[in-house]
Amino acid sequence: MMPDKYQEELTIPCFFTGPDYRLRPSSFFDVAQELAVRGSTQLGVPDTVLHKRGIGWILIRTALQFENYPRIGETTTLQTWHYGTKGPFFYRNYRMLDTGGAALVLGTSLWVLMDIESRTVVKPERVFDLISPEPQSRESTLPEPPKILMPKGVDAEPGGVHVVKYIDVDYNQHANNAKYPAWAMNALPLEYTMKKTVREFQINYNREVRMGDSVELMRAQGPDGTWYVEGLHEGLQSFICKIAFED
Image (cartoon, rainbow, N blue to C red; front, side, top):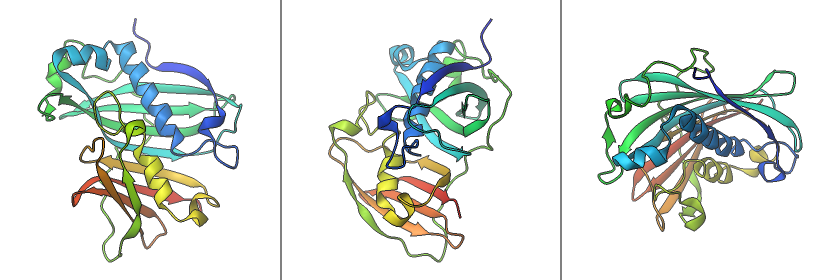
């Protein structure tokens, strides 16, 4: 019988932590990506299988809520599960727990299937012989990741330019989804990234960027103090983040 979740332990390594010895918010995106790979492998639909059909997994949106931050050397429990399908979307949830079972990080994400050659979205029915459209587990974490828009009435300012290099690109031949949050954090003022704590981090992936592409980073702070960072390539939005810090 298929387990209702994929689960493993993770001892927080030094390269996942920042100057305060705690998990970086952007590092959890690396964790979530690996969990998605292992979770899809558990279900029999990893990219290695899908590539034989000319398709692959593409992340569209992620929402994370940070309840607390583990420190370097702390042991955590990681969980992920397929949360069913709706329309073209596959839902996947995440959870990081401390040794007492309390939630450290909660997450949810939306994925689609992409035709590798045409770079277009394909119908989920292409893999229903391999994966059920029904949830692996019906436990919820967060609401569906929303569409993010720059708030009206604010002026975005430059936050730097990132050129996509070798280290950014994955086996889908585009910038890996776990790299974008680090670009966004680097675009923010240091008085936030160094002195405040991220509580919510949402991201929409809208257009892929590839090796050599220049991504113009623009940042804006909303009326409630929440920061927005978007990445533009040739005038089109590649991604947009919404990052809420603790008061």
